[in-house]
Image (cartoon, rainbow, N blue to C red; front, side, top):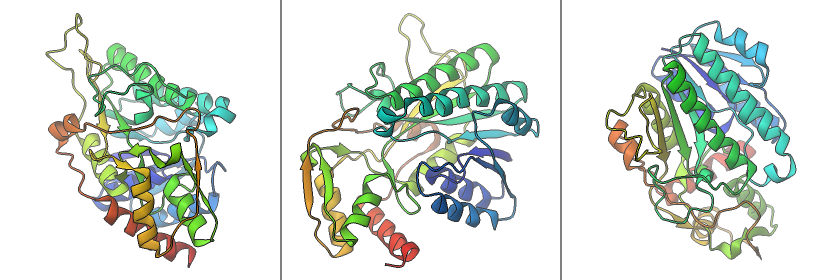
Length: 334
């Protein structure tokens, strides 16, 4: 297939593009290479993709309406939309960036799919949409109407926008709610990366919520496999959908939303202990309260995705953190 992968120089986008190329798909990777974090890391991911047969890179912002329309005129069998302004805490400082990328950009994606007969749109949502919801594990059948940060609100908006296009134009859309993805080539603004850098430098780490957070840490290889499987499984209408008792996970339109997590939450302090063991060093910890916009715990029920595409994550935190540390030491030569 010919697949457009947006955010291809990003963490998850790079791994998904790599997996699609490995099985022989043609991939057009799109990214604006913004400076939200270290651009050289994005360029290093991109360099690895550009060495693969069947890959072509387009530098473009998804919020560029005319530019995106031109890209879509090439024609694509599938679109995997992973470009976004990420980060819960940064959304408190620069909310306009989230609307530009995550709302305006997503509208351009939907319009491109609509007018160019794309067979299936798979897009990134987030576990953050569950917000103040506390019933665990999080289920797609439950409402997710109380996001706690503008980042989460823009992602919930994506799900609603996708449904309208599925309903109005028959566009098959699948939203994937990612749960705390980590692993090699990860984002420097995320906990594992920041902790590793600080511990190796002999600097203290900030441990929010006094380390009592629980997160459904999910290894990036498991995520990429799930994304590709979801891409192949074209969303279809739910024939049993009942408008008197509407199920948020599906619709009478070709629309689906799935959790994609590890189904095994780990307390933040345990995560840090595993990292300390892999590094052979202890961390100096600054215990801090919960940050605005954060949720205390995440725990995915990914059974719907398992039923649909056979998604079964297999990487333990111990194995995943060790693989990240090996990559970090090699990449930064420490």
